[in-house]
Image (cartoon, rainbow, N blue to C red; front, side, top):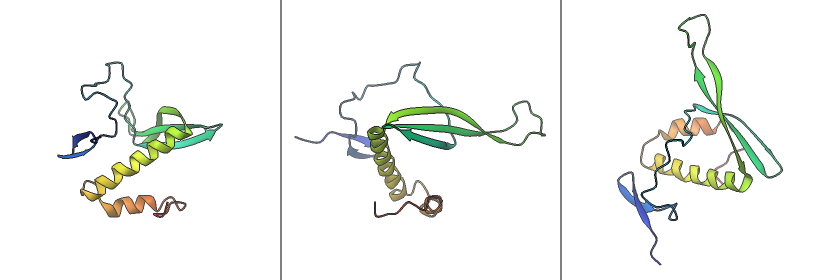
Length: 121
């Protein structure tokens, strides 16, 4: 059986979602958020909860209030889904680094913030 491919970044790559039609588009009601990062996670009983946040300034234009972190959303998912998502993101980050789309040195500094990470896992 031939592996299905799609165009990504100008080249043919394996389709990671062959069961989703290429004409798929999310409905207008599809939830979309902008987040600067992840504020925290909580896991228990086989479920992962991920909190997203963004950095906001003073919305009324006053300069007396400094920028602050605002929660903007959360995701609940089974730990197995979290594991697949993590592998997917690792794969995407590897491609970004290989194609020079994100500075390798900057990424390495970010990884150093998490001492339990190693390149051997």
